[in-house]
Length: 571
Image (cartoon, rainbow, N blue to C red; front, side, top):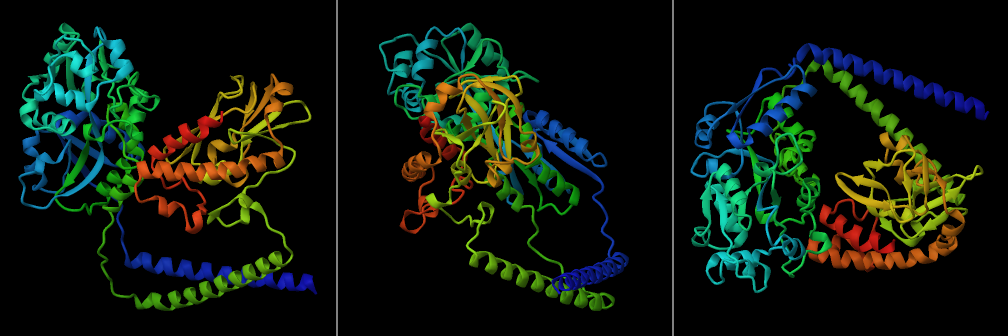
């Protein structure tokens, strides 16, 4: 009888699916005859100021590689010419700031596509380089030196008795002047004490006067097609918090990669960054232009750091992409020839959806009544001690990793369930290669969630034999199956018998995790007050209960704090 019911059910579902497919094909074929949606065509025209020409050409080239049938023309024009091109047709204009349209009375559509970075630079032969790297130069000391309330010497900048004078140089444009004035929080009279130079003259002055300081764009000091700085020039470290020393969190100036990452995280003064805009006369309606701007705000962001700019964080990208969505809906007369098919299709969809929903409810009821649940079926609403899965037989480390010795003596390593509950879905992972050696406490891998990342540290020492290739295409397996399909490495241990003494089995680790929940609440309460005021109440629910995936929607600065104040302290 059961077999007959199962067969009947299978036939019924098959018949319903065939009817749906028939109605869909009928509906599509009729609509194809009444609607002609032409693909994106024509040429995208982009006008750009000279300083952004390299970036515009890079974007245009990469976009056409991904879209071979789409043509893009890029024209280099002066900033003063931008308003005329905005009003002359369907053109896109890439500009470094809003001053291009400051005097315009006509509304202009604009999208933020990246950020320009203004940097103070010094000579690599600066006689006070050691003190500069140790103490940094604060905004307050720069403002004091330039305002006249303090002497223009290195003693004012470094807070010591040095009397050696310091000269300041700046690029000859209003944009640089406005950014520096905003950073120093002073008026233009102070900026007048800075000597104006062209880029070539500025660099020459720094070479001839090693104790001088210059202000320029990041793109000016970066070598073309390279991640190195112009010869004999360095970024001047900024003491952002003004405490008279360069804290570990502020040490981002030794190379371009660290600096670029530091700007994105929020370690660099925001007043020294400014928005890059793409302008248009009105909201773009051309499909090709919309596709290009969407690409710029997604894949195109990857090319900003390499050209000396800073990319937008994920929530900023989404907010700018939302501007490209048309809010108005054009209604079209209903097609009588399609009305019957639509009604039948709707009825069938409702029937099938209702049947499957009812079947799901019955299955859930039966499973709950039998008292069986699985980890993958747990609701991701509240994060509590009871939600953490800790299989027995594994050894756990305080870096939120686990290790398990296989029968052949090799050790499998992965990330524990607690950490995946905190981070939310992992979007990618950076892993080491087979043959690489690791020591307990060394960086094991980097887990990434929409650009934000955490360094994960090794629970044991050894040589990597293999890594989990499946994670390269589906990193979220760390979330769904951290102890099975989501393992990270298999290693040949080098000091297992000794290091196992520092690991814990499930019961002991569970007790230790209770303290981690308290530490996590304390971290969120402190970090969110500093980085995202007013957001803590959205994270800690009534009674102080943690929200599952608590870091997922928070910014990179909070992730950086979590790395240094939560993960690193457990090593």
